[in-house]
Image (cartoon, rainbow, N blue to C red; front, side, top):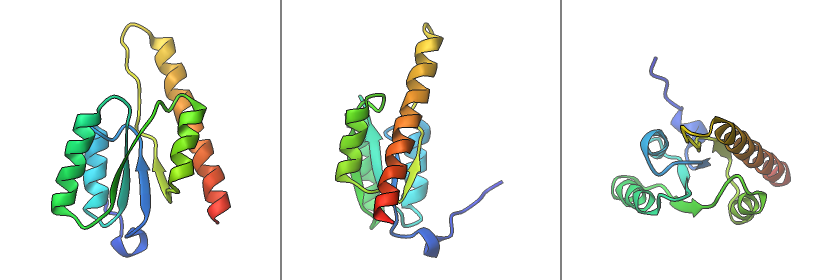
Length: 128
């Protein structure tokens, strides 16, 4: 099923996509920017792919693309992002996948999604 976000409703909105520098995250960024949404591309250790993605989008779109970095399992780093930016939409895509340590993956991924979502809700309530 191919669903498209209606451009008039969301055009110009700011979307934070976590884990957005590569793979699925990068495809989400391409999809959203192609429909007129401004995107915060979050990365943790993939700086070069994030910069490459930003350059690619800037060549083909007139939207704003900003890069943000941080360890989203650390509350202070999440808060830093939400102090600088006020996204209208958040897509929690970041994930840790260490085949040797399932429990650490679950803990990091759940914590990351929780901290980002909590910060987004707080910010959205302030912004109205």
